[in-house]
Structure formats: C-alpha cells, structure tokens
Length: 151
Image (tube, rainbow, N blue to C red; front, side, top):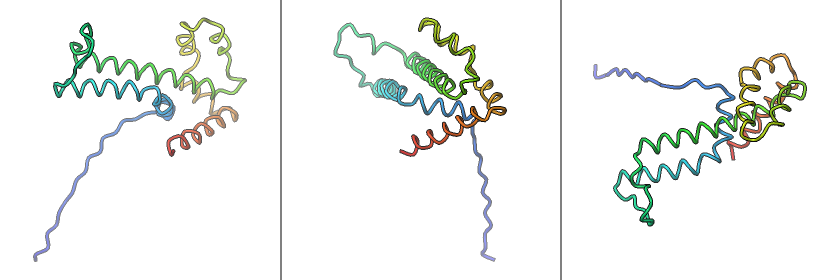
C-alpha cells in the first residue's frame, strides 16, 4: 500500500591490464602529457573552426583529425614501450640481467629493438616468482609508483 519497489541495474565495463603495463603508462605520462594536450588543442580548435596558423606555408590546418589521432597513438605507444623497458631494466636483479650488457653495447638506434628481444614482462613475472631479489625490486617499484601517484 503506497510502497513502491524499485529495481536498479548497473553495468560496468573495464579492461584487463597487467600491473607492469599500468606502471609503464604511469612512468610515461610526463613525456606523453605535452603531445596529448597539443593534439587535443588542435583537434578542439579544428572542430570549433578556430584553428589558424600564423605561417602562410603551414599545412597544420589541412591535416585530417584521423592523422592527428594516429600520431598521438604512435607517440603514446612509443613512450609507454620506452618507459616499460626502462622499468624492466631496473627490476631484474644483477644475476638475471644476462643480455642487457649486449644491448647496452650496441648503437642507440638498435638498442630498443634488442632490449625488446631480451626483456619482457612475461620473462620478469616468471623470474620474479623464483628470485627473492627480483621480487623485492617489484615491491619497491610498487611503493615508488604509489608515492608518485599520490603527489
């Protein structure tokens, strides 16, 4: 009598990401933030019709939004991969850094490709389970990331 029953349904969407990938994204943020804001500004001004260039030879106004989004995706992917490799390099204990010295001796242009072949998050997770030192590095990274995020 006068009492209404209401039902409520909620749907949540999410993505699955490894902790290493999330840590790499956090570490890459300072390098990605500037290009992200720049391209976002260009896309917003283009959408509003206010994108102008002071240079008569600039082609910035003729670049389609899809290309700007592709450039942004490439920048983010490259920076996250770079940050991930730097994190991985610091996580392996000295005993498990076999192959890193070889990658360091090569020239800069080939270094990233060689390190990707040497290091992977899967390798680290496997090694971490049996190595107290590598596992301790992971715990310390978690603490460092939490401090960085809470600032």
